[in-house]
Length: 404
Ligand code: SF4
Image (cartoon, rainbow, N blue to C red; front, side, top):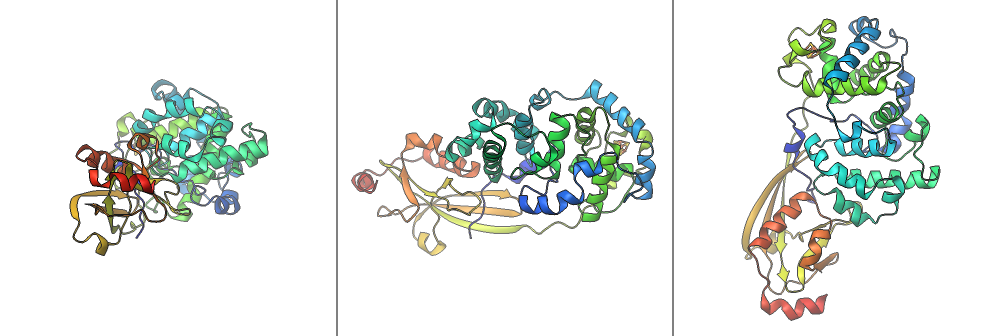
């Protein structure tokens, strides 16, 4: 079974949950544009009638939107954190940060954001880059579909908008991989327009403010939260308001026991036992999968397999995978275990037989090229570990050079 080898989801459970996005377009842009985006788009919710679709508790909060929003903005102006993407109004820089922050911790993004922006400072810079270079630069961030979506958006900006980032909601929303969340982020953070934002942090804050036991990941609750976000958003300072609302969830209204005594909006909060909220739908079961990989190092390079089109890691490289029965009798090197999304992966590594031949899609990569060869983080880690203890077999020298 081919299973993704992404950055471990352990990295998803952050001390402060930064940006677990609820942006339906990233896995299916077309669906997001045609359904959910229209059903509760940022524009449709901007300061709309508070009574429309809101629960009684939400209506009560909506009636005090002005004071609530101002309290958050005031708190943020004094306590807001300084991130590179908060020092810019460049929509491209904001899009990059939002895509990176999806399911990746803020420290991980901070370690890579500036280098990425230096390498790809504009949409045309990424649009004209080859995919291998983009994938290599994305390493460590995981979830590599995001970099392809970002490159697709950069190319669409070039083709449809002459390389200039669109400023209209419809233009932004038309870009590949951009849904409700990212549209709202760009509209508010780049253009300071009163568009709503809802991520997991915001949903947690709303569930507690409203003392609402409905699962926050249920479609009806999501719709209501988007609507409430549109009603509450600060009309003249949405940039600070949206950043403040998310930061409240990241720093004070955290999972577990929140810091209510420090909360700038506690006077509006109706949570009776905040640590019991939010409620979520039952989790999808974790699936265990196993891979059997071979490690074949020759003087001509390391045998690698390029992942096929249509796979999660399309175009990237990994150690060649073999059926379990083919590795029987080979020398077992080590096992690697990691988790990604709903998969718990165990990879068994074997030293290849000396007469191993490349199969279709496999090639020898010279060791000096490995640092520039795109691969997922778990693959690079295990290869670096194995290379530390390996030397090419001299008897394989001539053959592997001929095969190259
Ligand atoms: S008072 Fe406590 S539970 Fe309510 S929003 Fe603030 S931090 Fe969250």
